[in-house]
Every structure is written in structure tokens, then in C-alpha cells.
Picture (cartoon, rainbow, N blue to C red):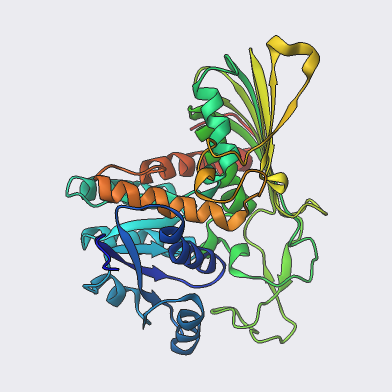
Amino acid sequence: MTESRPALGVGMVGYAFMGRVHSQAWRSVASVFDLPVRPVMAALSGRSPGRTAEAADKLGWAAVETDWKRLVERDDVQIVDICTPGDSHAEIAIAALAAGKHVLCEKPLANTVAEAEAMAAAAKEAAARGVRSMVAFNYRRVPAVALARRFVEEGRLGEIRHVRAQYLQDWIVDPEFPLVWRLQKDKAGSGALGDIGAHIIDTAQFIVGRSLTGVSALTETFVKERPLAEGSSGLAGEGGTGEMGEVTVDDAALFIGRFEGGALASFEATRFATGRKNALRIEINGSAGSLSFDFEAMNELWFYEAAERDAGFRRILVTEPDHPYVGAWWPPGHGLGYEHTFVHETKDFLEAIAAGTDPAPSFEDGLRVQRVLAAVEESAAAGSSWTSV
């Protein structure tokens, strides 16, 4: 059968954790959803020729580049997917947009507000030329989270009064865990705050449909020094000599906030919640109802309607064909997983490109989150003082 859909070549920068899940999404999306365009995995970029070639072969990429600038220049690449640490997001994204490439960029959008502002400005200018961009907040694409947004939009919760958000992990509880790039401010921007706190900020703003206006915050680094990671560029004693390096980011961040319209909020992001693996939790309380979600039970949404007081919270198994995204997958009751959120993400991005519309979350949405991250850091540095966003 002849393929009639126009092809869009994808070039991806980075092939570690995020690169793996993004690759799986690009491989799968056209076989699950009926798309107006067909993604082609044209090229993968990484610094190490051998490792990049090995990753490309394993993940399904047709060609390899060891310089992202050459990837951006390729005629067979129309989309640039950025899966690198935050310190390189701005340079790659701005160059790709200037070259007329659509850009999908991992979160958080940047390491600083200034970088995020430059990226948002470049995206706005590119959009006027028909070039699209999106920041990859994948938890928006969890069907239960999208259903929660639908409930709020339909007014089923009434006036929103309280928002509680947590993201709890435990992967660096062991003080012998090495000093990887996520624990270095010059590469990651911040710690738990930007890595997982950015997710709950975006998820909460997405569901509620409003932005945070101010915060009061505390941050803490529980383990101040860690063994130097093997191959940790620019650090003395690399390669397992037993030397230690300074952790320059937060291990945990707590803050309260207020949304537009007056709703109160509390946020907790930590990589020191022993026993919690990936517990992204949201609870929203309104005048007419409440909802609750926990990613460790990602196919469930708990919902309470005040008009049915004796019923209590009820469990909605979000696997029905009329639930967001689910109809393209399996029969009712057959749950989805983490990787499916990225398939949904690429689906929405490709459809927006084909339709000539701006996808969401936009770089402007990413900037909005970046400003909250900056306000949290400013508040914590000042001793939890109230800081406007």
C-alpha cells in the first residue's frame, strides 16, 4: 500500500532516559492514532560516536550526528526533539526555530527565566512563520489528568478553593548515590524543584486552568556531598577515585501558593520520600465537588460530588473509549502506562503541526512554570517570604 500521508522527519538530541521514552513514542504513535502526517525517525544526535550509534540502532533512528548543529541543518529533519539537560535547551531550541524546524523540548523549559524568555520570544517569532513549538509536560497526557481537567472545565467542582500537589520520589535517599548531572545546578538549574516540582506546577495549573500568582517556600539539601560520578566532566577525581563533590541543588522543595481567583495551594517536591517511587499526587477541592489523582495508580481518578453526600469519593477507572486518548488503545479495563503519555504528547504535537495551530503546552506555558520556579527559589533564599510570580 502506498503511504499518502506527508512525512515529517524527526531529529532527536540526547538518548538517555528521556531519549528512550521519546523514541518509543515516535516509533509507536502512527500505529496507534490516525494521523494526518507520518513521523520518520531521521537522525539521532549525541556527543559520543560509538554510544550514539549504538543508541540509534537500538532505538530505531536512521542516522547519527555527533553535533546537534549538523542535525538541525539536515534537510530530512523537520522536527527537532530536545532531550538534553536544561543547560543546553535554549541554545538548541532557538537555533532550531531560526532554521525553520518545529521544536519539542523537554521540561523544565530552561534553567533560568532569562533563557525561558528568550525561548518564548523565539517561539512567538517562529509561529508567525508557521513553525510550531511545545514543551514536554507529559503528565498532561495521562488520561485521568485530562479527564480531571474536563471535569473542572464543565464546572463539576464548582468554585476551586484548595489545590494540593505532591511529587514524591526516593531515588537519591542513599548518600552514596553518585553526583550525577541532575544534582549539579550548572547543568540542571535546580534539583527536585525543577526536575519534578515543575511537573506538579504545570499539572495543577493545567487542571485548574489558572496560574499561580505568588508563593512562599522552603528548600533543603539533605546530603551536601556525594561521590563523584564516573566520567563526570570537569570534576576532579572522576573515574571512581573516592573523592566527593558538592551537591549544588535542592533535595526537596515545599511551598504554599495562591492561584488567580484566590484558590489556595500547597506543593511538595522531594526525592527523599523513602518508599515512594513516582507518586505524583493532585487533590482539588471545589464548592461542588473534589477530585484526587495519584500517578502510582495512574488509570484511576477519584471524584466526589457534594450533591451526593452519602456516596463519598468514587473511583473512576479511566479506560473507557470516551475518556481522553483511551479509545485508540485497548478494550475497557486494560490500563495504560507511563510510556503512553509520550505517545499522546507526540500525537497532539503532530496534529497541531498539520493543522497549523499552536500546540499546548507552549513555550509561553513553559515560561510561566519557570517564573514559578524562580519565585520559589527567591522565596526560600529570603527565608520563606511571600514572593509574587
